[in-house]
Length: 254
Image 1 (tube, helix red, strand yellow):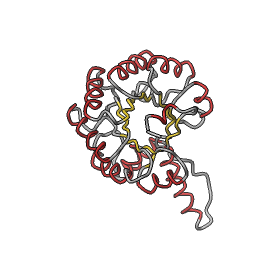
Image 2 (spheres, one colour):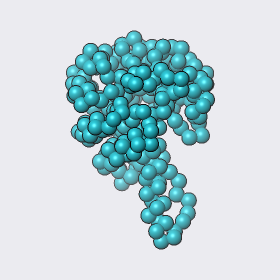
Image 3 (cartoon, one colour):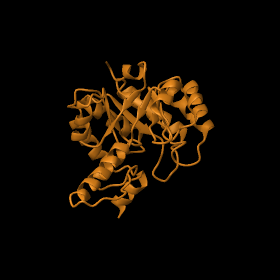
Image 4 (cartoon, one colour):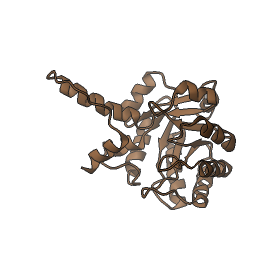
């Protein structure tokens, strides 16, 4: 089944996000039909902060090795690692040459603002012209960066779909009414970020969500497991909760 087809099944595609070849291969062995990458995991593993736009080399290198997996792979390219439209299109063309099936392309910027809508739609259209076979999951950070803005989310979802996006990703969206509104507005598959305690797979399935991503959760849980296991060697125990996104960013800043 193609990566595009996986978004139109009876149930939402549960997409786990890997940060290196071993994690990706383990997820494939567990039976997942597709694998994505987590930009936080890729950045932190390289000692860099996420969403700073400076992990292009690491992202391309990981994509190259993950392309060996026997399932479709989709790669988080943040904002494309450049503000130049041609650079982003060239990057996606390179990923497509490895056999990468999809990308995430976000409109959030490192300074906490959103890319201008006309610029983002121009990038999306250019990427689709350059690599039409790649599933372009257009991410908008209208809920992720600050106060949720449903109207702006709907405006961007419609515009991204009109520009050629194959799917829309709205991390941080959890409310049923907001989800229904985006589903109606976009008319392309909707991707939602799984957030423990805030989202629930079966509920998202009933609403008609097409794809559920784990984002950085698996990477952060892996860090927690490593710490707990190491401390357990001497019998030490205690409460060592999973690191938050901000916690991991803090690790590489310290």
